[in-house]
Image (cartoon, rainbow, N blue to C red; front, side, top):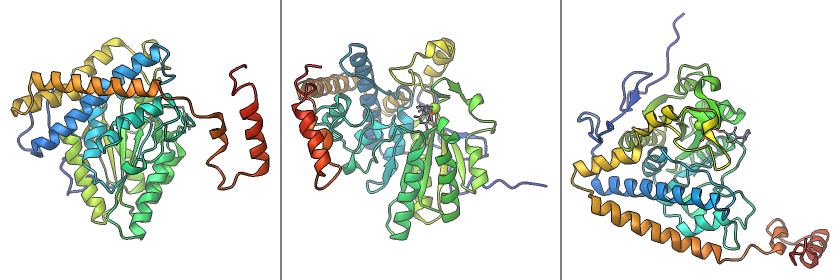
Length: 377
Ligand SMILES: Cc1ncc(C[n+]2csc(CCOP(=O)(O)OP(=O)(O)O)c2C)c(N)n1
Ligand SMILES: [Mg+2]
């Protein structure tokens, strides 16, 4: 019996089912036939956000090592997959992130101070310290609140897409998740519902090679993660996730399909996690340095910088100026966050009920008057 594969859809810009669509080589040269020829102002904005993300990650890692913040999830090496995909979505679209995509919210205009306040969990944090660091909520950016349990945002994104389909709105949703999340129940439920109801959503699967210490060959017996679309009738494609131009071209084509009523697309963004899983992780105990060095040669930031340089759109002076400005802005945000008080103890009891029940009000009173508030415990 011959099993027909349901992908690739002909409207999308790639060839065979296992092919990884790519535009750029490591020297930043674009394939003439595949180059989406994006306006340089757009490519520069994508590049600057990627670079800004890297600068922020490097600083936050040091802040954690200095004991000034408790935790950080970096995205070193995955900036193209995150930023170029966000750039290819429309502003009214929903992004349902995992914990590694804050640069997508920054691309959409999330104020850096808001992010840094979240990292400190201070009184200006939109979540008042109730979420983990990097678990950002950005309503204005249509960036759905991050939930720590793996995979939950995938079903949420399908729900958002189902709502926009019922309302006949031109709104597409995108779920970001990792290779490890394809083993979650939510991934399967979401893919099934999206396939049956042709919801306008994109499954942006960041295959960064690892799920903490679990490598791809222990995560799945499928040939590729894109293969997982077959079972659900969801068209799926593979794309070089370290190639911002390829990511943009792929995601915008899939977004156009979704907006035209043709349903969801699973996009396997093939990338690599250059850093630790989080600041709580030490990858040297489970993966070879040589593997990391090999993948570092395809650093998405270096490739896109070289592309811009070839176009005469970026210089060493631009790089130095941008880096200095980004670092200065970041320092200002850190200084402010460190000089902002903690959320009040009383705030722990707020925002649940419109009118606080008597038993909670009593607990709040005891807490506020108790030793913890006076820092005597
Ligand atoms: C339901 C659930 N199980 C386990 C965890 C612990 N955990 C946190 S991150 C992670 C790995 C996820 O890997 P992947 O989906 O590949 O994303 P990546 O971190 O590589 O971006 C695990 C198992 C969790 N947060 N939620
Ligand atoms: Mg992973």
